[in-house]
Image (cartoon, rainbow, N blue to C red):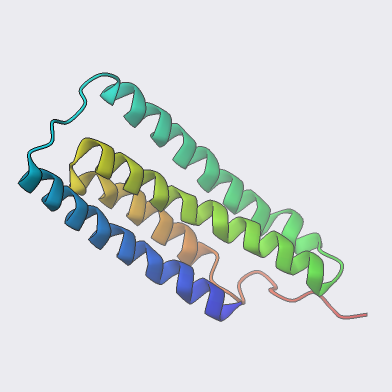
Length: 130
């Protein structure tokens, strides 16, 4: 579990760096930024990020604690980690689309907070083996 957690947490920093590089290359090529629907895209991705973050916490601290075996625990944990990772990916999509790399920072911050809340070994990480 620790290896998966570290890999997913480290990828958040990679997303932030990637957003900066892509935005810089788009500015250099002077491709026009699409203006239609910018506010609605921000709103939709923000709502999706909040919903996915809440689902990740619910799964990690809810059904995951009731897992009867290691396989069930693993499934719930991976789903919770993927949902928290998606928060940073929404920020990456938004920052690339708008060509504003700073838009990714709140999303990456939220994803990092979720990952810290779901640190391996927290809240009884392994159910008793029968």
